[in-house]
Image (cartoon, rainbow, N blue to C red; front, top):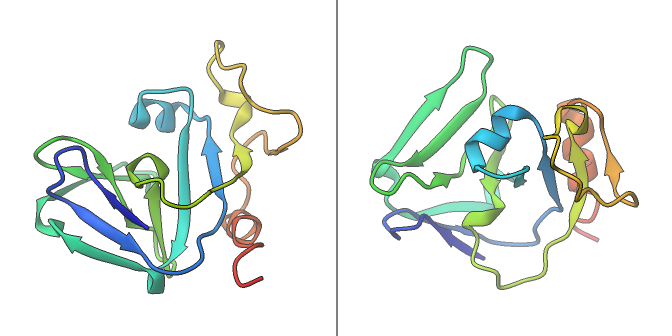
Length: 145
């Protein structure tokens, strides 16, 4: 599956079976995406490949370690290395929809916006951020099966 920024200067590819998606409802993710939540994937580095424009990426890192990479031309949020782990965070909105993807979990629901009432009760929810290992295990539970 391919993905790119709004202007198309930055493009990437995911090769192989993809994990499930998550939606984060914390205030930082709301600000980053400009919506009620931020939907993303955490993919293994081996299945991620830049196609072009990597040199056009600008990064912002908060003292807490939260990182946001974006296109220096159009401002679109783009993938970034997932901390010190062998994973890449991919914003789901940057993907071209060529295969079905499934949201598996909603995180940080205790800090959701007061107007956010779209979280399906049947999906797994965490009031705060689960451990990184727990989140990755949950999202990757379908990969390779």
